[in-house]
Image 1 (tube, protein in one colour):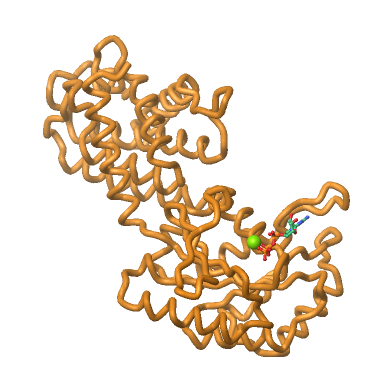
Image 2: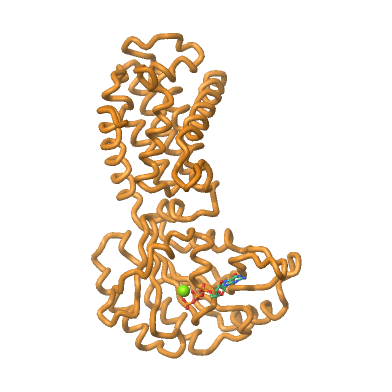
Length: 377
Ligand SMILES: Nc1nc2c(ncn2[C@@H]2O[C@H](COP(=O)(O)OP(=O)(O)OP(=O)(O)O)[C@@H](O)[C@H]2O)c(=O)[nH]1
Ligand SMILES: [Mg+2]
């Protein structure tokens, strides 16, 4: 049952989430290579399956061979109906056209990085492919060269793949980091191959992309949770600092204003960094904060009792340390919830979020963070 406070929260959180998503922007990746080398599989392995599920994408040029798939913080530019190597001229003309149209647009509309994919099992890299890579670099796009579906035995890469990489290296292509990245996007139970090389490819992508889209890449990817955590902790630090500076200013205690804006902003920022959709993060944040608003008591009133030394000082103003500790503990509790959701946990039967689990995770983490911070401060 939605209360007026819920409606207020939904609106305020929704706005904070959208503002943050706008600020983070979009990382746009182009992906090239021969048909069937494993381009889509690679994108899915690193960025999750959402981009594939969002369907066919939109043609972005008049000639309609370039498609942009968009999902929040990620855009993937893909080719349809033209083959790299065979149709280089047509493809490059179209790409030039596209880049020209983007010239005056903001950073999040630009193309940031290209992956050029070669399947190891093909054992060849054609002259026309080398020409295509050179042309991409000339267009100003950082190109990352990826060998896909590279078999390994233990840590030993298949010698044929190494030989192929050596032949490519001899061409001295203008590739972003001078490296040729070995990858296996999917494990194969039959041969016992496990997936590998994804983290390294992601790191190379960060290095190749402009600094302005690092947050978008961090939010879009699903394999490096350390990077997400680092960003989230930075947001918590900012909010904690602001709350501490605000000091003894009153924190709204009425149920109509459950959270001060800086805490909402912090929570929205963390949700965007973990790639949680507006709908899911609104539902989750309602569930989390409802943990503390039972029986008509305000969030702050209910949570503050877990901060040692805060006592029951909930009448109107709290001191700087407690405001900071409160914000810090809330941030970490919410970070934990977001991380578990992003890992596909906290789901009830049927796939919807499990509010009870969310509440439990949030409260447990809040209590332990509040206690810990108090001890260390
Ligand atoms: N086991 C295994 N299979 C892979 C891997 N990468 C791709 N495949 C398989 O190879 C086939 C082609 O992969 P896609 O990702 O569709 O290739 P693509 O380059 O996107 O193909 P097009 O979009 O048609 O150009 C699929 O059946 C994948 O499951 C991998 O790393 N391991
Ligand atoms: Mg594909």
